[in-house]
Image (cartoon, rainbow, N blue to C red; front, side):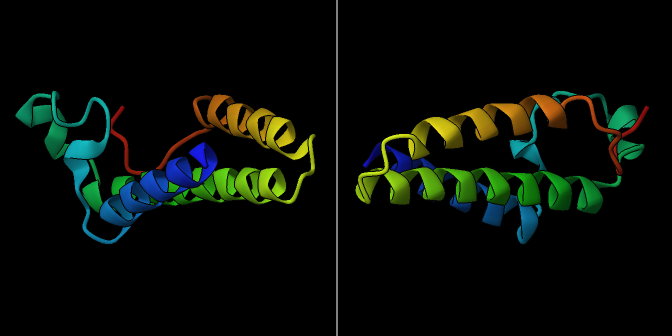
Amino acid sequence: MGFLIAALVLGVIGYLLRFRHWAWLVSGYNTSSKERKARYDVVALTIGVGNFAFLLAAIQLLAAIGSLAGVEWAPVAAMVVFVGATIASSSMPTRGIAT
């Protein structure tokens, strides 16, 4: 049940970022100075982070389906992919972020 709740929360966050462009949900953006905020491409930033939230929601959904289906290794595998994707995203070049 926890995986379904996490998937729902991440899906809602992904929607708010991707389609509503709620940039204040992006860590560090809302605390930046006005000069630094002016260097951001807010639409590209929110689309990218929103898409990543959708990806994480999909991973959580797969973990939930595997758990409900009784596949014991599915939640563990999904969490390994979840953590791996999160770590990999922190080292990828990004669009829309001021340098």
